[in-house]
Length: 624
Image 1 (cartoon, rainbow, N blue to C red):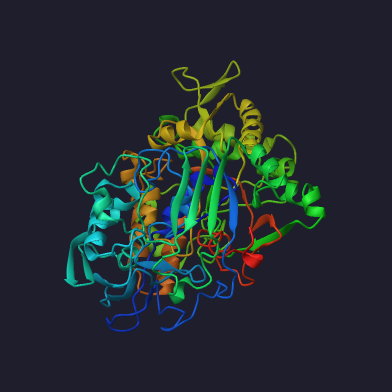
Image 2 (cartoon, rainbow, N blue to C red):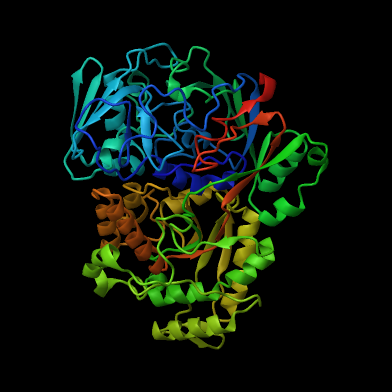
């Protein structure tokens, strides 16, 4: 399951989406006790916090209340419905889980995956997790004062599962029945062995049935949703700004799980056309927080007057989460990318060492696999052994070289062209039927090897549009040496979203944030249904029975050891599949912010993820 919240660069959106979709799904392990109503549920073992805890460990219950915060977003929006595929939704409504539409359970950011009761007072499941039952809090209320009912929950789950965004549909297909078992109780029974589902069902937004019933829920729109969360939408200027106001009558303000969270009275998101405009607005005092994505700029360019005077302070927020995958993804729906040798050749041509030196002074660390930077990551170059090997062996004949034997990315060189890598690339392309004639790479029929690199003008989750373009241009120069001349196309966020949702691209930038508790979301990311179903995260169009088998092994593991082995095996299938040309990552977030904005001294293991900023922050003295 995964989470993300980047308030100052909506370039961030693709990954955050990705990121958030992971947040709402996880692989679950068995409870250690018999089925009894409990205050929380963990991925494996027991929740870290006992019943009766006073607050989450990364929240400050003594935080000042009041004041406001102004955060930046790039791009635009034309919808207030982040739960459907259509439209370009206001991103904060999706990346701030529970701020508007709450869920039955609340995720702790300080555990690989644990849920504690929010709308639900208790959760109960059997040892095999074939069903889950939630008991709603009778006092839970929507912002209009009406009660949150079992009927609202059941309507929300069915509607999201049948008319909502594709990220909700796979899990809904595993529900055998949903029934009311008491005045405030709902039980969901599953038709598929999947230990994660008991947790996943606690993470769906609960909407007010009376607001949406009889309307076409799948359509986008600007109707203000009625939720039960701490904030209501105060002001909407479509495409320009969104303001959330704290609900003074919020029903959940006294719950222990909410102590120290949602401290600010008002949160405003201002939208900008590009990152440069956002940064200048921050430097001029129009914005309160800036997330710097470039380590070299963080080190060399944060000496402007607001910093030197002390009005703006610089904070590093570390994390212990997986790197996820970021870089250029190849759409294998296009036949030119179908052969792994072609994909490896294009990886060879991407000289990461030179690009890293050019753009960040060599400060970024390269992503070596999808779960690098965590114990869930495979060991690059090392062969699979033990349980990992036994999981992969049934698929050995169909796996690309290196999956079992060991795979590692080319090291690159500090020179503009890595001639040794280009020589390897030429050989691989020739083996795949592509040779250079008159300076152009062509196949046996003389058809040129041509493709488009599609970029979002709003950038991505961890990379600005300018840096993406610089990387693309450096890469294109190297590809010319192979007889390939890619076209680089930049689109606004709405056009870009439309094309990527329908997979109408050859190569594009790809951000997929992954968590410490991967599970069902990986079927959305890498499952075969995503080859044709629009709106999934399977941008590469992969159809891998091995990947789906590893995900199934994750979902049904009954020990930590088996679970980690299954994730390691999935990491091998993904990385050696050679679908993405990885770039770099930062093990900490760099945040510049107004000196009166504070965050707890204890930061969660996930660091700067959704649920952290602005949820745990406060304004010193409550002042604006």
